[in-house]
Image (cartoon, rainbow, N blue to C red; front, side, top):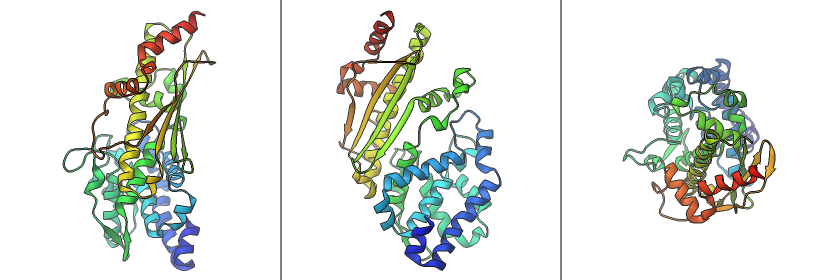
Length: 335
């Protein structure tokens, strides 16, 4: 990022802009801010510096090296700050964590002389707030509420970079966001619904391939040899949740590319399942699912429920009916 700033703006201005970013990041990390989010919401999946870095890396892969070099330095600068601030509202609790007022309060805390950065604050708070939640009209189309913006006399394509943030955050899932011990020992708060998110992270792997124009999701699920009624229910709940999240990820792909030239490159989401019994791989007759572009979008609510997602999977391949998969697994165990 520093090299891009220097290349675009020259040595002095480039280093200054990079310093503007690192001064905020260092202030937050030096105050252990991101670690304290875990202290406030201990059952959330990871929202530490590691998650911030993961979203950065996903955003870079989504943009691609060539596009990254071509983007305006100030847009990259604002995107970096938006990634830094997108989840800070969790320090006050999960509910409404994307509220502009909450993000602004944290911004004012860690941006020195924040009174001199009102244009920047407006860009960062509005863009970061749009990564989730509801729009002014009450649907999921949060990006439509974003207006044109500028900082330091430079035009900021706020919809573009907010869409990149929102999609990159959706892609930032995987084992790095959970702890297997908490899952194995049942130490997560199921009443808050957090356990399923940790289990989901544990089985998920998401690959970004800009050249092949696709996002690939692989779910790797281990099944206990003692596949009793409780184990079957847990498996069914997890598998159902993966359906929901896969559909949600594809919805986010289609939604965000509506507002982003960079994201138009991504035309497919593929979903593949691998299963094991007591850590021994087994073969289940399930074809890879591929989601392609379809409309209308944005703001659709068609499959935004776990029940709706299962129906959508079954419509694509009826072998994905949960009862059929459980029956198939039971036949493998009996052998």
